[in-house]
Length: 66
Image 1 (cartoon, rainbow, N blue to C red):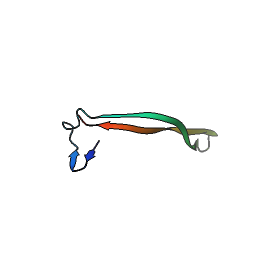
Image 2 (cartoon, rainbow, N blue to C red; image 1 turned 120 degrees about the vertical axis):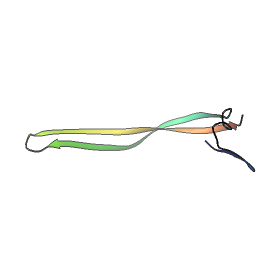
Image 3 (spheres, one colour; image 1 turned 60 degrees about the vertical axis):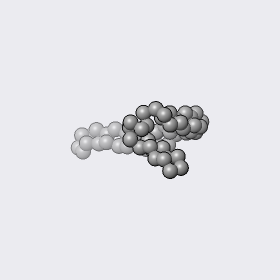
Image 4 (cartoon, rainbow, N blue to C red; image 1 turned 90 degrees about the vertical axis):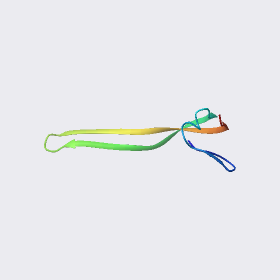
């Protein structure tokens, strides 16, 4: 994390030890569908699979430095 407040820059873990970020989750969305296929030749061994990642939309409401 990096906090910039005008001319002050806080970047090291000791400077950021008391920092706090508050926010709220606005919603959950789904990413694109990814289809996969695995197979082995000459054995009729095939497998289809799919995956769809979930993404959370977050609104940052306040950042306080410690």
